[in-house]
Amino acid sequence: MEIRIGSLLRGAQEATGTTIIIDVFRAFTTAAVAFSRGADRIVLVAEVTEALDFRDRGVGDLCIGEVAGVRPDGFDHGNSPHEMSTADVEGKTLIQSTRAGTVGMAAATNADEIYAGSFAIASATVEAVKRRNPEVVSIVAMGAAGLNRADEDEQCALFLRNLLQGRAPEHDAVKSLVLAGDEAQKYSDPAQPHFHAEDRDRALDIDSYPFAIRVTREDGLLVARKLVL
Image (cartoon, rainbow, N blue to C red):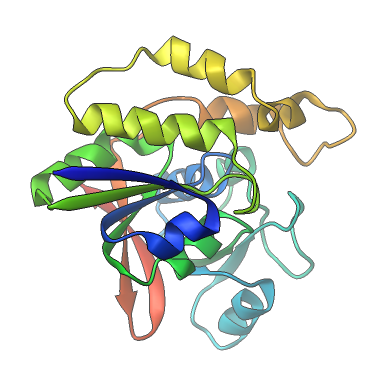
């Protein structure tokens, strides 16, 4: 198994083989929480207007996501794992648009198959990939808005690579590295209340969910579903 690590939008565009698109703060932690609460599927889109149009056309029930960390006008929920932990999503189809994770998914047009990546589902994601035994695995850390590298996604990429190669990273050490990073500071800033401190805690709760999130292309849509191993 050849493992390649890439970053940002370019990394997603260049990814081949089995691809893991990482967005720790917060898209694919929010998605994991949604699936834990019974969401049926999540349609992933790059643009806010696309998400709203899909909901209006009955493609999905609820729009979730963010622009610059804030819930867009017309969306039902923001991109917050903490808020999602009490949302009524059981049996529903969600439409998710964020500025990093879902943009990366849309850009990964050369991938054979795609998984969502975050610390919350790290070990399950690796197990799902190993069972497929692909020749090439591309791990892409999407970073801040897909434009600037972010410690949480870069560290998650290394964490997943180590697991794929049979090593067991030390959880507390990884968390400490992420907490020292720039993006983590938003979640203790009273001037930015939309970045809940609880979001950071949930995002760094490693292996809190025992399932992977696999993304497939269905009738022109990128559709994420919970994959129980």
